Image (tube, rainbow, N blue to C red; front, side, top):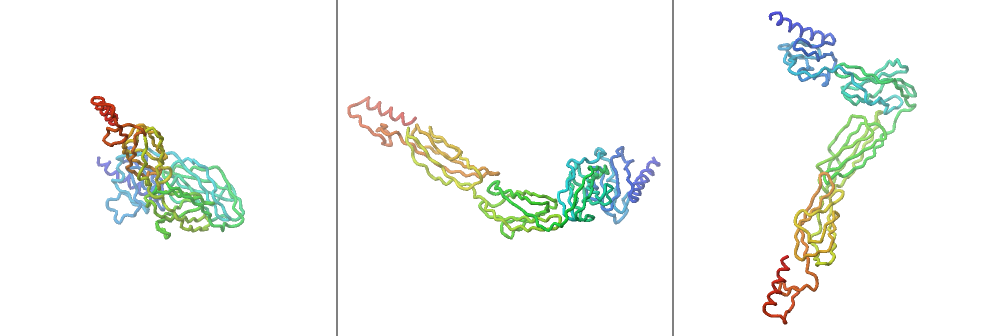
Length: 407
């Protein structure tokens, strides 16, 4: 037991010493797992600070060595950080290049190379006048999208060989691409990017902005309720298109947007604010409908304004007179076959996401067919005289007419 107590600190001190000396070591002794690899870095990044839930590195020099197991110029390691309570499986697989490197921009002394990998990894470009290369360029951090901008070491009108490489945070790799090449242009790029924009209303309170750029560029989207805009969103990824959806806008209100673009040579385009007038909320403007008559054709078109896209009419509650139907475009048509007053709630819904909805209570009165005899009705419509009939016949006719009205 006493030997084990002395062996544990010694093993950890070896780890710390190896880190200081720039060696690659495996953490062992605190558990059976060997899935931790420590590599000394001049500027460790976030991706290197969390190898598994049971182990982490803190990129800071401690003010005091108390409680610390090992100290290096880059890392401070704590005993509780090394407790193997849960381990992730070892990552021993190098990254895979899923999209081959492509030169997406080139000028007289600048080139931009892009490729993708199946896991976060670094990105390095080796280039030169021969396949032996001799010069490198890289991007910071770990990602699956790699864009390396070469700004030094290039001359105009020159042919270059290059190769892309990626290594994951566990030091698996590098994975190298095939041997590729590009040729720089004779003259520098002095033209500013050309930006084309369109917008599409998704609803009365949201809009999608679509931008295309005639060359790779980093962009800044500015937008707001006034021409001064106010909200600024910068995208440092090099792109030749960009899409942004704005939500929570005021229906029927005004909104402005502009896109600024900078190409790899530093040429800048400053966008002019563009006005968007959002659609108003959908609203039914029909407030009344004409009467109809039994066995007479009926046709009436409902009207609504505002909304986005197609407006669809439906009956939310109540019923139309028997024989009449409502089409989605707001047309009520048919031939009624029952008299009476029919109340219903009309609803219109636009095709926005989210949808805009409005309702309106309406009624249609269907009169009896011309010539109907209902002299005994309480309404007095179609009153007839039965002077030749008396007694029981008159009473029977009156009862029949009243029963027909109740149907």
